[in-house]
Length: 522
Image (cartoon, rainbow, N blue to C red):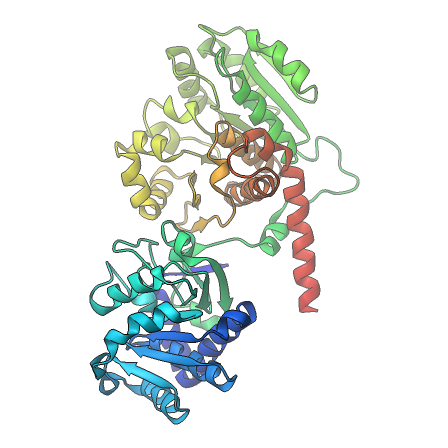
């Protein structure tokens, strides 16, 4: 599904209006959706009184429409208007006029009563934030900043119209703080800032109100940001024909593990199997092979004599031979950071051409980025911000603060798909599109979680032979499995093994939810 920036949403609005959609009707739909979504969740709180805080722009107009609906349902609603009525224009002025006709109490900024807002907000059961909307850039200032602080102190249910005031729609940044919403009702399409942290943490539950824009609205915008939903994921999953055999579902070669980190190899290989691969072969130092045999008899082991407990360039020829029969390869988890492993990684990148997932020590051991850019097969790299920072000589914090630009530019320059891991994992594709993953949780920040993602990605890649699809599906399914684990175990005790154990259930839930959504439409 499409994600828009604030600028793109403004262009979409204008295009829809230019095509003949009345602006007054669009605002009516937005305000009605906000009121209905609020009342359906908090009927009891609504009886305690509702305060709508409206700015002078279209976001504020949506709030005025919501106030009209609350009033028509017999609820006590008051409006705090952060501008003078004389400044309102067009449809905003019209909705202000209709509010006055309904005798809704409105306290404009220039009324001399604005200081009473603190008590109104403190006593309300519901507060609707319609202050600034998706056009904000930078920190909230002036009276709106004061209101943000008052709203967050209140005990009311907090509803944001389009996006919580203080969050940038295009980046998710909230440099001066933001309204901490319980529900965000956004219009037409979700925004980039709803999915990226810290903005994501301010949105609460996110719902999208369809304004009915025709498809032609998007032709000129050419959106570059997306999020997946279950229906899309289900449609992209590789087929599982009833007459298929293990060769049908692809073979994955995993080169991973070392004397000190055999578990990384095991998690990666098992995740490739759980991701649907028909055969998984695991190359690892022979001294670690015995432990793997008993833990996962389904995995075909390739024990190799390494150096200093790591696979090395002496194993290069054998690995190239095994790669000839594989459909995809996972390289790097737990491989080690010594010279033997580094020589192997760089040698394989020069010689191989099969679809490859490069992670962890596979990334850390790159002698130069040109090796990745020059790889002759399809390539997916899966760094976390620390690994990304080392590649680009940036701090992890710089990577996180500029994640969209960093991911997009890296993917284009290195001609590879990039999964930039984090609380809001990004899948950046070589054509410039970025998918922001909506699944996952803080419990997944645990050792081995990335190894599971690498194996899952390789398993999907072996089946799809499409690096773009695999780079988008894997984080979604990985996060869904983590969310299932969270429900059962909570965030404190969640392990990588818990994620791995629920991958099958994640695949199943995606397919079942997609069928339910299709049934609803029928």
